[in-house]
Image 1 (spheres, rainbow, N blue to C red):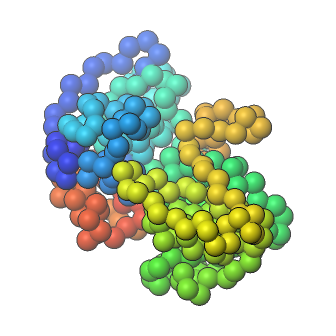
Image 2 (image 1 turned 135 degrees about the horizontal axis):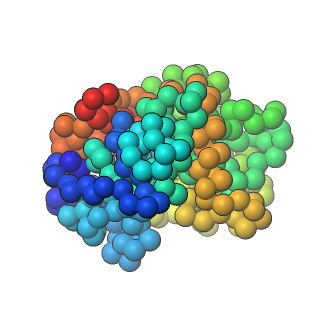
Length: 319
């Protein structure tokens, strides 16, 4: 069975034919998958701009935008057949929400034994955060603010919390996110109380007001790294105040590209994300769980905000 977006705003479970694995393939039984509240809820609402349909395809997506489409990329399962070296191993794969599937052996990455399987669904999001930190290039002792305490922003903050001598502050409009910041071991502030004169601000709120506030928090010559993806939403931004006089910079970061200067492959970046998930601080990002059978009811609630969560984990039958 697999979860399909049947039309914008509505999904259903559909049976899937799963073949036996061929040479170089593995059969995976899903243990958990994760819902990416940013990109995936935009897809669920049918808000992927047509000119981004090709670039927004997930690695194992079926169907096409806006719908019907089988979409997702946070999947953790156990290998049941195929490569003998992998049978019985827990693996991460960029696969949609489906009970069993067959993929090339190279498409799965073994989850370290000390990373809980449910936490490993964060791998794709932590990989995005790793890329953001590479793009941001923080320096020892930097004053850094992360604006937006969602799934991606919290992952960035969790990585930076361990950065040498950094002063890290997490900013969000929701005061309840203070508990998340405390769990990560960093300061929290609402937008109006945020500390200014920052060397670096990483913006991940997906709200134009958050981007505007990020610019206000910078010191002269400071940089905002923009992680938000807005879909088809226009982003008004006033650049006639301090933007030029203080020589501020806005830099985009997107998980689809790695800086050539890093000298890393995508596979190496993914393995690094899994290594980072050994840190128990990331457990604070798992804030909700539902059985696979309830996905058609859960996704609309995540999309409209009536079900609040950072990472919402989907548990599969038999686990």
